[in-house]
Image (cartoon, rainbow, N blue to C red; front, side, top):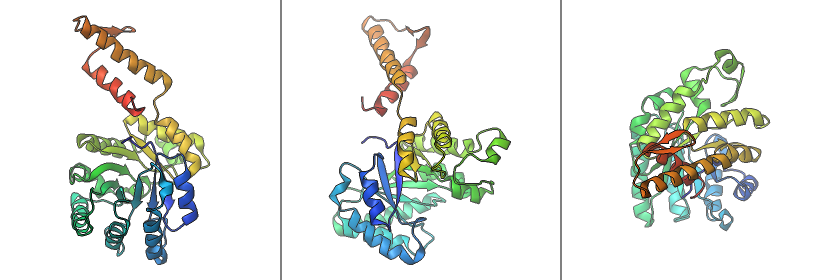
Length: 299
């Protein structure tokens, strides 16, 4: 399964937008039952999403849903009804506002029971959103909480609110960033990344809310990729191309990775331990980094 670079958020209450999302160039989309659906439309949106998950228009895209948080009256019905009504159509659930490992464990246990009841053949995977000070403080135990987990996702908007960090938009470049002079999200992004990698999970950055600012999106995506992130959420189809570009190795990166592997293979065949390429010494770490680049493009 290819790691998703662009993950498009689609309101679960809007069938027209769901259809557009399925037809988009995003690597993955998720149907949202949380922030983009008003309380009075939660049940209606749940039914809309259950029906949409069984649409053949998904093609090769995975079928992912963000449910409501565990401290709301809707989350348990989201889990039960989606799994009961969609058979094996549902691939993964994004769990928002994860504060500690017990949130993941409780969700996984409920999924165990529902899957047994319906005879589901493969487990629903989970993505955990880290978007609070408490969630960040427990992100290492969260990442190790369940074998169902596939990703940790940074939620910059709610995290800023929880931590008391001033911000003029969700994930956007504003006067506070300029005044601070550094990368204000470096610490949470780095900590989430290490927790994810230590447990074999994807690390996904949250959205950049100003969809009319492609330069800001490019900067945000480049910074998260520089830290090691695998992909980024999009809130508008117009952001997909820029995010895909940021998280796709360039032609020169691919050429360099191939050259590293070729050089080390030639050295091994000749019985030489020391390998040099373009004035740089190569070792096992060089090979691992080169393989990582090529895996991103399916080689």
